[in-house]
Length: 142
Image (tube, rainbow, N blue to C red; front, side, top):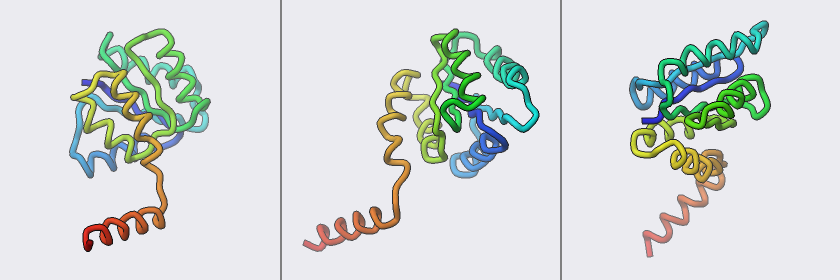
Protein backbone atom coordinates (compact mmCIF):
# COMPACT_ATOMS: atom_id res chain seq x y z
CA UNK A 1 0.00 0.00 0.00
CA UNK A 2 1.23 3.47 -0.88
CA UNK A 3 1.30 5.83 2.11
CA UNK A 4 0.06 9.38 1.53
CA UNK A 5 1.16 12.76 2.86
CA UNK A 6 -0.91 15.80 1.89
CA UNK A 7 1.12 18.98 2.37
CA UNK A 8 -0.38 22.38 1.66
CA UNK A 9 -0.47 25.99 2.70
CA UNK A 10 -2.76 26.60 5.67
CA UNK A 11 -5.45 24.16 6.71
CA UNK A 12 -6.17 22.81 3.22
CA UNK A 13 -4.42 19.46 3.78
CA UNK A 14 -6.31 18.81 6.99
CA UNK A 15 -9.61 19.82 5.37
CA UNK A 16 -9.02 17.55 2.37
CA UNK A 17 -8.40 14.60 4.68
CA UNK A 18 -11.51 15.41 6.72
CA UNK A 19 -13.63 15.54 3.56
CA UNK A 20 -12.12 12.28 2.30
CA UNK A 21 -12.87 10.59 5.63
CA UNK A 22 -16.45 11.83 5.44
CA UNK A 23 -16.86 10.21 2.02
CA UNK A 24 -14.70 7.07 2.33
CA UNK A 25 -14.26 6.52 6.06
CA UNK A 26 -11.10 6.79 8.13
CA UNK A 27 -7.90 5.63 6.45
CA UNK A 28 -4.53 4.50 7.77
CA UNK A 29 -1.13 5.74 6.60
CA UNK A 30 -2.35 9.15 5.48
CA UNK A 31 -1.21 12.44 7.02
CA UNK A 32 -1.75 16.16 6.66
CA UNK A 33 0.96 18.80 6.92
CA UNK A 34 0.08 22.48 6.94
CA UNK A 35 2.51 25.30 6.22
CA UNK A 36 1.40 28.46 8.01
CA UNK A 37 2.52 32.11 8.13
CA UNK A 38 5.61 32.33 10.30
CA UNK A 39 6.58 28.68 9.78
CA UNK A 40 10.10 28.05 8.55
CA UNK A 41 10.99 25.56 5.85
CA UNK A 42 13.17 23.84 8.46
CA UNK A 43 10.05 23.25 10.58
CA UNK A 44 8.24 21.98 7.49
CA UNK A 45 11.11 19.59 6.76
CA UNK A 46 10.97 18.29 10.34
CA UNK A 47 7.24 17.59 9.96
CA UNK A 48 7.93 15.57 6.81
CA UNK A 49 10.83 13.70 8.40
CA UNK A 50 8.77 12.77 11.47
CA UNK A 51 6.24 11.08 9.20
CA UNK A 52 8.69 9.58 6.71
CA UNK A 53 10.85 8.04 9.44
CA UNK A 54 7.93 5.76 10.33
CA UNK A 55 8.00 4.19 6.86
CA UNK A 56 11.60 3.70 5.85
CA UNK A 57 11.86 2.58 2.22
CA UNK A 58 8.09 2.18 1.81
CA UNK A 59 6.35 3.88 -1.11
CA UNK A 60 5.13 7.34 -0.19
CA UNK A 61 3.16 9.74 -2.34
CA UNK A 62 3.30 13.38 -1.28
CA UNK A 63 0.46 15.54 -2.59
CA UNK A 64 0.94 19.31 -2.56
CA UNK A 65 -1.18 22.29 -3.49
CA UNK A 66 1.11 24.51 -5.57
CA UNK A 67 4.06 23.68 -7.81
CA UNK A 68 7.01 25.69 -6.50
CA UNK A 69 5.44 26.45 -3.11
CA UNK A 70 7.27 25.66 0.13
CA UNK A 71 5.44 22.34 0.72
CA UNK A 72 6.24 21.23 -2.83
CA UNK A 73 9.86 22.37 -2.71
CA UNK A 74 10.47 20.65 0.62
CA UNK A 75 8.81 17.46 -0.59
CA UNK A 76 10.80 17.59 -3.83
CA UNK A 77 14.01 17.79 -1.84
CA UNK A 78 13.05 14.60 -0.01
CA UNK A 79 11.95 12.83 -3.19
CA UNK A 80 15.23 13.60 -4.94
CA UNK A 81 17.05 11.89 -2.05
CA UNK A 82 14.63 8.91 -1.82
CA UNK A 83 13.49 6.87 -4.83
CA UNK A 84 10.48 5.51 -2.92
CA UNK A 85 8.94 9.00 -2.66
CA UNK A 86 7.04 10.81 -5.42
CA UNK A 87 5.49 14.28 -5.35
CA UNK A 88 2.39 15.52 -7.18
CA UNK A 89 1.24 19.15 -7.12
CA UNK A 90 -2.27 20.45 -7.72
CA UNK A 91 -4.12 18.20 -5.28
CA UNK A 92 -7.91 18.38 -5.20
CA UNK A 93 -10.56 16.27 -3.51
CA UNK A 94 -11.50 14.07 -6.51
CA UNK A 95 -7.84 13.16 -7.06
CA UNK A 96 -7.31 12.45 -3.37
CA UNK A 97 -10.37 10.17 -3.29
CA UNK A 98 -9.13 8.29 -6.34
CA UNK A 99 -5.66 7.86 -4.85
CA UNK A 100 -7.08 6.55 -1.58
CA UNK A 101 -9.26 4.05 -3.43
CA UNK A 102 -6.43 2.79 -5.66
CA UNK A 103 -3.37 2.89 -3.42
CA UNK A 104 -3.71 -0.72 -2.28
CA UNK A 105 -4.01 -2.07 -5.84
CA UNK A 106 -1.27 -0.04 -7.55
CA UNK A 107 2.41 0.47 -6.89
CA UNK A 108 3.75 4.02 -6.59
CA UNK A 109 4.74 4.47 -10.25
CA UNK A 110 1.47 3.04 -11.57
CA UNK A 111 -0.56 5.17 -9.15
CA UNK A 112 1.28 8.34 -10.19
CA UNK A 113 0.74 7.59 -13.89
CA UNK A 114 -2.94 6.89 -13.20
CA UNK A 115 -3.34 10.20 -11.36
CA UNK A 116 -1.71 12.16 -14.18
CA UNK A 117 -4.01 10.45 -16.70
CA UNK A 118 -7.23 11.24 -14.80
CA UNK A 119 -6.29 14.69 -13.51
CA UNK A 120 -7.89 16.64 -16.36
CA UNK A 121 -11.18 14.84 -15.74
CA UNK A 122 -11.37 16.07 -12.14
CA UNK A 123 -12.14 19.62 -13.23
CA UNK A 124 -15.20 20.15 -15.38
CA UNK A 125 -18.11 22.48 -16.02
CA UNK A 126 -21.81 22.11 -15.40
CA UNK A 127 -22.67 22.76 -19.06
CA UNK A 128 -20.35 20.00 -20.24
CA UNK A 129 -21.97 17.52 -17.89
CA UNK A 130 -25.52 18.59 -18.70
CA UNK A 131 -24.84 18.24 -22.43
CA UNK A 132 -23.16 14.88 -21.88
CA UNK A 133 -26.06 13.59 -19.76
CA UNK A 134 -28.65 14.83 -22.27
CA UNK A 135 -26.81 13.03 -25.08
CA UNK A 136 -26.80 9.82 -23.02
CA UNK A 137 -30.55 10.13 -22.43
CA UNK A 138 -31.23 10.73 -26.12
CA UNK A 139 -29.17 7.67 -27.09
CA UNK A 140 -31.10 5.53 -24.57
CA UNK A 141 -34.44 6.65 -26.09
CA UNK A 142 -33.40 5.44 -29.55
